[in-house]
Image (cartoon, rainbow, N blue to C red; front, side, top):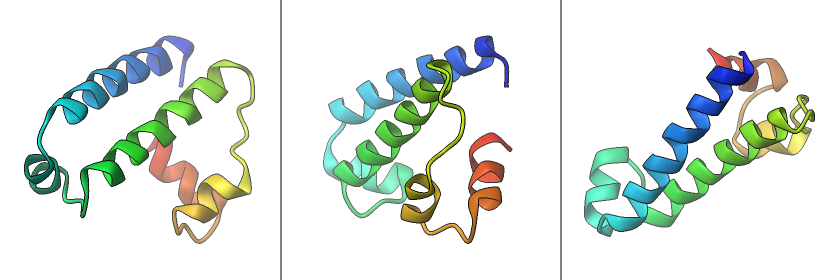
Length: 83
């Protein structure tokens, strides 16, 4: 991904985060298939943190990032994150 693409993704994520924070619990759970509103907020925040780390030059995800989300290995995580 280019810096421009990452910045665009960050903009989208920040807008989505604001939308989710302003929505009620039931709407977020139905729209994003989560158990709680906070769960989806945490997911968005994790993605924001990842993209910001990439922009800061720390491009390698830590094992905690892929392992914590239940991916089999780092390659599966990267395919999920970056297509």
